[in-house]
Image 1 (cartoon, one colour):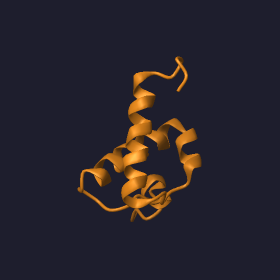
Image 2 (cartoon, rainbow, N blue to C red; image 1 turned 45 degrees about the horizontal axis):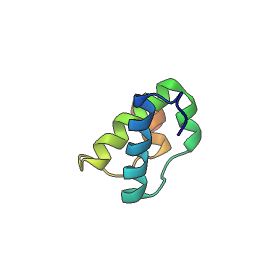
Image 3 (tube, helix red, strand yellow; image 1 turned 90 degrees about the vertical axis):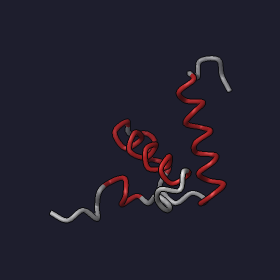
Image 4 (cartoon, rainbow, N blue to C red; image 1 turned 120 degrees about the horizontal axis):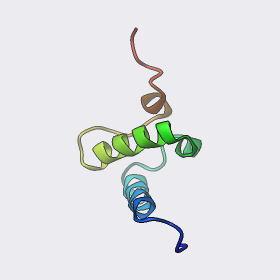
Length: 68
């Protein structure tokens, strides 16, 4: 890890590692490049790791399955 990486990024990396160990990678990694999607993804991964929900998909992050 580089010295430029903040503590927040270290936490995100640990969360992704825990999530991947439990579910594999079930979403597009490119979502992490968009700050809005990244925040939602972090929230959903945290819920999944803690057992409050199942695996996260692109649709969960993008809201594609919402009913209007």
